[in-house]
Figure 1: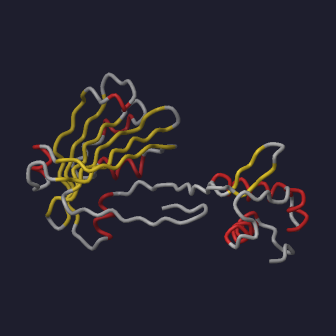
Figure 2: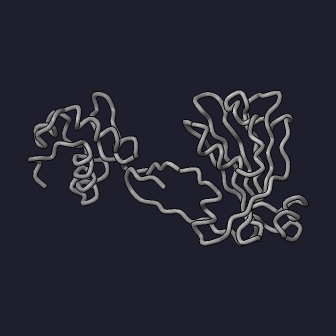
Figure 3: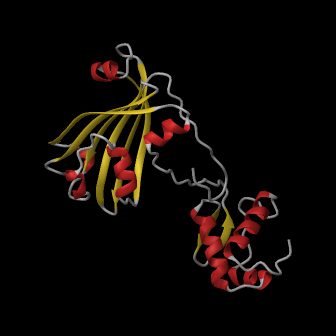
Length: 234
């Protein structure tokens, strides 16, 4: 593709990705510098810099001062994971959503919430067409999210309230298969020690924890997502 008329950083990003995919620039290849690319594309150097930095953030390029920019030898696609609203997830599957608050109290949180003496502990059951779907066991840092103390969470889940109300900058997430304990078995209509899918997730706003939650899904739950190369989100 000719560089004439390629002036936006998104268009430059697309062209660079095309050259990488077509192996015009193979893994390990050092690409032209920003000045030469700006001249080729007929744009400002800052525009090229933004495009290349976006691809570096996505794991497709490696940028080193004085060494230039090269195509990553082993590209690692980096993705952003959107925290789903459980109600919407169920309704998007064409099922009727139901919600039951089990308990809401102030208690001593697990260590992963980050050194708090007390936090808001909320447990709830989400259902799909009347059948158990997922058990939510959540701790909320009320120093970071003081508004949670005013929420009864009897009609709207802590999951939905936090996603729509509390900002976060980053988090971590873990997936595992575990044998259901007595509480989980009873709530999810599962036999004792039945294998269940568990998600453990903690989110932060800067250096402050927002919430940590364990989501235990009823037997038969199947997670589905989409992966792709380049700067994509799923």
